[in-house]
Length: 506
Image 1: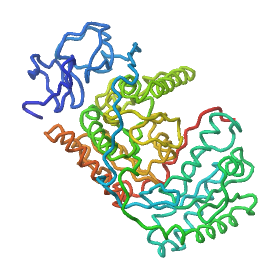
Image 2: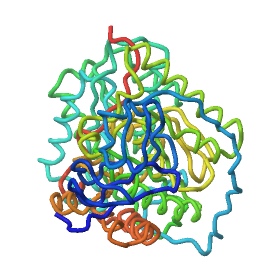
Image 3: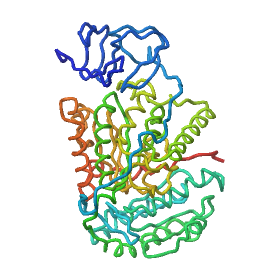
C-alpha cells in the first residue's frame, strides 16, 4: 500500500480525482481527507456536490449525484447515475485541413501489395460460409489442409482460416440484416490480408452465394472459389472438393512477397475491451497519439463502438470535416437511442460489471475515455457497419460495443491491423487482421504477459503519452511487417468472426 497514494485531477473543472494507488481512509489529498477506501482507478470527490448536480471528469459531465456528496467520499454507482442532457454539437468548429507529410518522407512497412493496389499485412486463405449450416464443413476443410501438410511448401502463406458464423438463414431475404451480412462476407473476402477465398454454403439457405456473386459481380478465379454441400454431393465430397480448390489456390497466394509500402496504406482498427479507470488516462490517449502519427503519415484509423462514444459524440462532431459528416454521426446516435428503447434497454446498460469493478461508473465516463483512442485529428468520414472505408485519415464506423462484433465490422471495412486497449485483461485475437494488445495498467501487463504487447501503465509513473504513442506506432509498423502479436502467437482469431445480427430470427 502506498504511503503517499498518487491521484490525478484530469481537468481544473473536475470536482473529483482518480486514485492511481489505493487510498486508505484518513489520507489527506487535494485539501480534503479520504472518508472511505478508494481503490485504484476509482474516484473521490474533492468538492461538495449536491444531489442532482453533475460530477465532472476530463472537464466533462460523467453523471449526476443521487445524494449530497461530501469531499473525501467515494464517487461510484452508489451516488452517481447516468442521465441524458443536451449537448452542443458545434459541427466542424475545430476541423483542420488534412495535411499528411509528403510521400517520400513517410515511414514504411513490409507488406503485401495486391493486384488492385491495396496493401495487406498478412497473407491468408479464408474459408467463408454463407450460413451456419456449412460452418462444420468449412472447419473440416481447414483441418484437412493442416493435416495434409500442404502449407509446408508455401512459406508466404500465413495459414488457412475458416470464418464461420451463426446466421445466414431463418432471416429476411432483404433489408438491413441481410445487407449487413452480405457486406460483411464480401468485406472479408476482399480484405487485403486475404490472398484467396473459398466460399462454402449448404445450398438452400436464405443467404444465397449466387445472389452475392451477382450483387458484387464476382467470377470464379484463381483466388475465388465457391461451392455448396448439396450440389457437391454431401459432406465428404465437399471436403474433398474444398481441399482440391485450396491446393490450386496456394501457388498463386504464395507468389506474393513482402515489399516496402508507405505507412499511408495502413488502416488501423481501434478497439477497447475490459476497460477500467485507467483506460481514459493511459492506453486510450496513448493510442490516440499513435493514431495522430498514422494519420499524419497519410494512413487511416477507424474508431467504432457507437455505444461507447455515447456522451462524447459532441467532441467528435466538433472535429468533423463538415456539418454533413457530423450530422451523419448524430443520426447514428439517434438510431441507437431508438434501438435500445425498442428492446427495453438503455444506452447506460454499458459499462459492464467488470468495467464498474475497474472504476468506471456510467457510459458517459466510459465513452469520454474510449473516444480518446481517436486522437485529435479531423473526422473525415462516418460509415455504417462493414461498409468499405474509402477515406484517408481519422474516420468512424457504426458498430456495437461488443468487441468481436465491432472488430468484425472494421475488418470487413478494410482494416489490415488492429490495436486493442484493455484494463481488466481481455483475451482477444483476430484473423486475418493482427491484434496488438495495450495494457492500461502495469498490474494487468504483469499478470497476463503472454497476452499483452505493450504496457501503457507506466504513463502514471512519468512516461509521456507522446512517447508511448510513438512506441505503439513503431509496434504497429513492426507487426504490419510480419512480427507476430501476442494473440497471434497464442493462436487466437479462428472464432472471432462475429457479424452483427439485426432483425428477427424466423
